[in-house]
Amino acid sequence: MSQTLVFIVISSYFLLLLLISYLTSRKTDDLTFYTANRQSPWYLVAFGMVGASLSGVTFISVPGEVGNSSWNYLQFVMGNMVGYAVIAMVLIPLFYRLNLISIYEYLRDRFGQKAYLSGAVIFLVSQTIGASFRLFLAATVLQIAFFDAYNIPFFVTVLTTATLIWIYTYKGGIKTIVWTDTLQTTFLLLAVIISIVIISQQLDLSLGELTSVIHQSPLSTVFEWDPLSNKNFFKMFFAGIFITITMNGLDQNVMQKNLTCKDQKEAKKNILWFSISFFISNLFFLSLGVLLYYFAAQNNIAIPTSSDELYPILALDHFGTLAGITFLLGIIAAAFSSADSALTALTTSFCVDIMKLPTKRHLNQRATRLKVHIGFTALIFVVIVLFDLLNNSSVVSAVFKAAGFTYGPLLGLFAFGLTNKIAVKDKLVPAICLASPVICYILDSHSAAWFGGYQFGFEILLVNGALTYLGLLLAMKK
Image 1 (cartoon, rainbow, N blue to C red):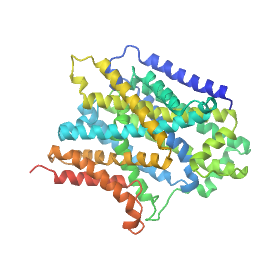
Image 2: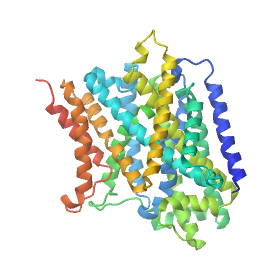
Image 3: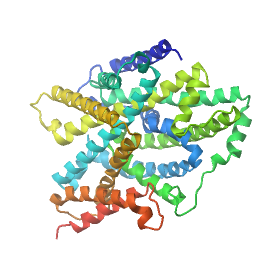
């Protein structure tokens, strides 16, 4: 694609986001930023959450990973479905009954102030690293697609993208996010569908023949039963359940959207229909993965060393202009739907959990919230620049993986709080929340050597949560 066309596509996309921001941020107040005044239509939230859940990492990695692990990822998605059911039946009623702005306020009421701050800090650290990593990937794509042609430094690309996110979220907050997520989900799914259509046209395959190619391919194998494999069904299925509960149900970024529905009945309906849409969307991504490898084989195109590069190379260099445009919009939408909601959630958590703004009636809350929002935008910019300076993808991935370990204590805290009424020594909770992920990171790094070749997969989260739960039991008040 020409640089002029890329510029027009990117500019038009952001102008559309700014228009949505303008329309949704009129006559807003502080509660609008945090909760959208609990007036979001459930179906809008459900559809928009699909794009937010399918991050830029998923958009690029899932189709490419099919070449390495077939459809094993679908085992994880099956677990996700059960996890969403738990969120709908257990967590949604709890959070609505307590009328929470930040879900970590529950920890204050159940355990005490130290536990409350521990949960909030875990989220703030994990989400800052996660949002930065996802936006780093998006900025990298934009750099290659456009900014490199004009010798614009990477930090300028990052600063531009972070500033644009701040501009369209600073006023309307979560209300704006609910609507922009809908737009971004549309572009995300459109990119996959158009790519599949173009493959069928270039290979002259009917819908039935496409289905046959996918069905007969060894790359569409779903189940893995080897107990030593980290792709084993039981590992991935149960990990899918608990990772969904933890990284969705116990994550302010995700739950803040669910809590914008007017009541728990609509929020439950939102979760149900979102989970179905999420499952179907992943089937499209996995099907695309099989077709990408089939297309490459039919056209004698060399498979890149990194599976993450397969979809971008084919979309931008072999599928034509339309596919290139939709791919570019898709990767931007996938990354920004994660980053913009993360920035809003970080601002909300810091203002509510750390600064206690809703209780300070005589403080200029809007001005303070604005400063916090700017602060997190700057922090994410700095973290991304540090990622770039490291110039080592394995190091960046390791940092992102380490951030994932911090969600284990949240699982343990909420599980302990919901399954019993035991009081614990609040002052010991921060130490427990720090020790559990450290122990798990060590176990994960040495599992093959220590446990006869056994490799932890996603189930390391369960171990993490269990250690936190055990630590809380040991810290109970007599």
